[in-house]
View (cartoon, rainbow, N blue to C red):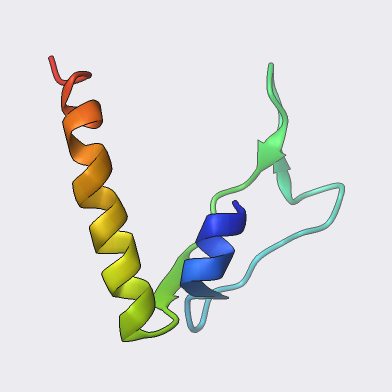
Length: 68
């Protein structure tokens, strides 16, 4: 989570209403979790994009081992 906050400015999509109340803002069941909401992720700078791209290139061979 910290890396997402470091790399991106996170905001709600325009004209989106979210209900974050304890009574209505969550889905019940086996796991209780917030209802879906739409986010906008914008990179903080071109330097942040370059670092994320570089890190992705380095980890891609490992991730490829999970392809079926």
